[in-house]
Amino acid sequence: MTDLAWISNAISTARPQAMGALLRYFRDLDAAEEAFQDACLRALKNWPKNGPPRDPAAWLIFVGRNSGIDAVRKRAKHAPMPEEDQISDLEDAEGDMAERLDGAHYRDDILRLLFVCCHPDLPATQQIAVALRIVSGLTVKQIARAFLVGESAMEQRITRAKARIADAGVPFETPGAVERSERLAAVAAMIYLIFNEGYSTNGGEAPARAPLCEEAIRLARLLLRLFQAEPEIMGLTALLLLQHARAPARFDENGEIVLLEDQDRSLWSRKMIDEGLALVDKALRHRKPGPYQVQAAIAALHARAATPEDTDWTEIDLLYGLLEQMQPSPVVTLNRAVAVSKVRGPEAALAMIEPLEDRLSGYFHFFGLKGGLLMQLGRGEEARVAFDRAIALANTAAEAAHIRMHIDRLIKESAEASSIQKAR
Image 1 (cartoon, rainbow, N blue to C red):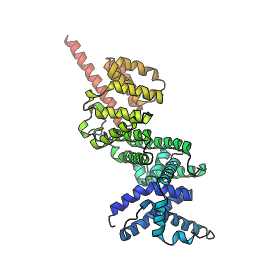
Image 2 (image 1 turned 90 degrees about the vertical axis):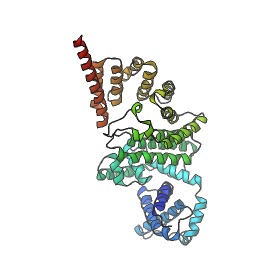
Image 3 (image 1 turned 30 degrees about the vertical axis):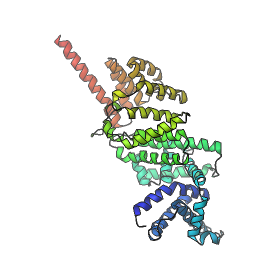
Image 4 (image 1 turned 180 degrees about the vertical axis):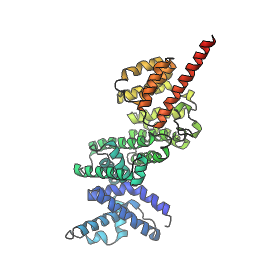
């Protein structure tokens, strides 16, 4: 085996399983990571000569565990040596471990690893950063670039997260059924956060942050392989795929935002859409609806529409109503108002969002939508005030530029109306 690309892919694929098992052995993130890195170096040296192992993850776990034991022995000379049969014959041990480490072991180890990274004591940004480092194996430089911060700042962020995890005394035992359900929800939320960190960007930053979306999809697929009968994980994976499928059409050549209704749908990834739609249909057949499934169903309706005019806004309105019941939130109501404006008109949508203004007073999208609805109703001066507020709250230059486009349109329409009035 001399294909280094294959070796790299095998190591990346095995990383969550191997890191999860090593974390269980050493109960320390740094020790587990060092042991895994040493195993990877030995794999790069041995696999090209000896061929690929039957189970790369088992090989990396075994070699990493022995490497970690050796490191502990060097630090504490009086520690007992490992048993001879543990280190005497690598091939036999590898085969034995491949037999013993079945799907259940892998599932618990990976879930534990992901759960450790999304510990509730950590801020969301630290959860994402440490997960990308420990679970995904991204370098600190790659993570820093995606977060648009300096490498040293990101290193400190990850170090603080690891220290907090160590101080929290996270249990490493195999989780029970109830705890597993709780952990699964937390892990799904963390993956969703990773995706949103990459998705919420502007055109200039999109290339640097796209890997976060891709990594979130990879982790969601991994979770789906471990929990194949969980409809919410199907929904989560489908949602990420359907959202990311639109990435090539979300910004124009100047990096400006292109609204969904204006996007060139021929640029959307048909492969991702087909995979996402299949998962949505499979999830809904379980008849156990959840928030990720509902959001995926909404994204699916957009994906199935060949043109903006074909969008089933009535069904989208109903789905957002269901989501409001599952996850009451002013942001969900705000999103529903877009569908209401298409079905019942801008006046009904404006009446829906006006009570939300106090709770969404610092939210860019509230004032952007309010300005757009007011503009549709011909209330230009009020629309301008809302748009000015949106610009002040914009998170990115692209968001601000998009609002300025609406203001320019208002100015143009006002000038045209004034010219018509003078002509009369």
